[in-house]
Image (cartoon, helix red, strand yellow):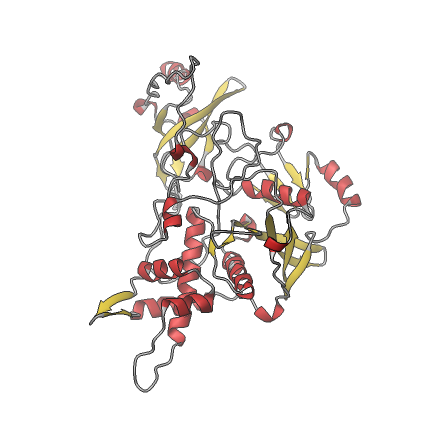
Length: 459
């Protein structure tokens, strides 16, 4: 039997699908269907890199043959012959749909048309575009899911894929290529592919300077670099400080090397984020925690200097060591505080990742409920407020306000007018969530002067 099993394992190639043993969140065994993305031989023993179908790519991993259920092996289907173009095989007819990012399955029906289309205003990718290959536009946002259980309706499945099918993607970019990153006192296990130089991807540990984010191949190189690196905080202007929390504004044109290194690090934890080497059109807002050794990066968000879609966030990330501690909502709250100073309403670039959508829905819900519960009745009549007033107070775009109210099931039509009804469950859940939310942005500590980038030439 063992001989037969060994022989059969040799036939398992890339593209095959079969159930694979994995531990779920409750540490119980389950056998989800998985696709074999790659096979490698180590000391005469095969290892298989698997992607669990309908699960997020961050759960992809290398597995040993004993975790494969070979009785239910599915071989890849033969692809239809590709159409000929100009007499050359392998050419595909161009299609506009190939340039459009597919819509998240979690989007609300009332979202704006630009949200529904899932289009993005700027295309970005750290890998130089290949000849003849379409460029996809992806404005990725990924956030920690902390506070998602705040008494409002249940959230989407944490392990579900944002995009249902990525089979056309390059096989290289579908696989994690970095085993471990050392950043200051933390060692991080990347979730996704990031286009670091290929010679560094075979190293057991990739070392990063936690202040300038330069990548180095060994601890000795890092120690030598630290003797020469003068930075103890991100480059740029410190525009907010309260307690140990600071925010730095970094211009992607003035601090190009830092911005590119930040994007490389972020790509390890953002599946749908892609960007080009040109960081000039972006501002980066890096949140740090201060101690005696310096200002340590916690997370960041980027935004376009000029956005025709009213985006106030392009990409947003809290690094894994700081997730589930309230920093995600603090980043989101800070982005809206900047919008308030600018006198605009803002919205994050779509599509949101699964964790990003959870965090934004939770923030929008808490922010809107906070306003509704503070309303006072006048002359014994029910308090009144319009969608536009909520949008002006919070700087949350009107479409996001409407979708959140619908998501919370607060809007009802009664006697010819729309009324908002707060149930006891919603109120109690909101109060419990706000008790846990200790970190808040203090507008008095923000020192920020918005610039009119349209009058500044080429940024």
